[in-house]
Length: 306
Image (tube, rainbow, N blue to C red):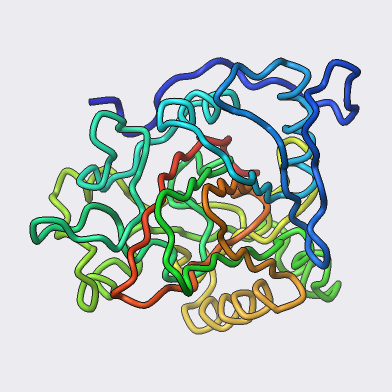
């Protein structure tokens, strides 16, 4: 079983914004009215050249959310592509690993033989993946395998835009503040009403101790500042009385997901969405219980936030 911290991968390449002459004939198109962009015509079932990788990497930094359309790849090909960006992280809920591929977390509401095959309530609250880790996620890739006929949208909120829109006095107040993030923050609340949350073993609990992160983080590759708190995992602001901590967090939670910061992704067959957890929060909108939904997620390790 791979270590829960990460599955090792080659060092990350440094992105360059220029599209080189030998780039593949795929297109990166900004999605109207949003910060996201779609990638059309890219075949990730074949090896990706360094020039094409750099082009994608630069687009990911610019847009925060890339939508790969009609992507026909295997789980192993998704894993290999994800590893181009860094080591992969293994989710603590190993019950929902794709058999034979521990790097993939199955996100699904499907029940087989009386048991859920995946995490059916993933994304119930706004969050950034694995913000409760010392090294939170750089980004996540979610590849659609089976989609419902209605519902199932995923929302993304641009946290650079959210920070930029804060009043100056609040920006000053947030300087140097740090907050605690805990995987367990809402776990029992979800478990009480959800069939998808198994009782955690003591070993699993020990694997996810709380982490303390800056309330405003600096993107390690672009230098842009972003809010880095979420209603799912952020429990308190260190050093503030509880009433002040909760009041400030509630204000930031409400601000960070204002409609003008949000892109709503309506899934199409074989979409794969790759988002930057250093730049966005995300939320699952949900779908009717009787409609099947299944997606494969890989998660790339990031850096210690600063």
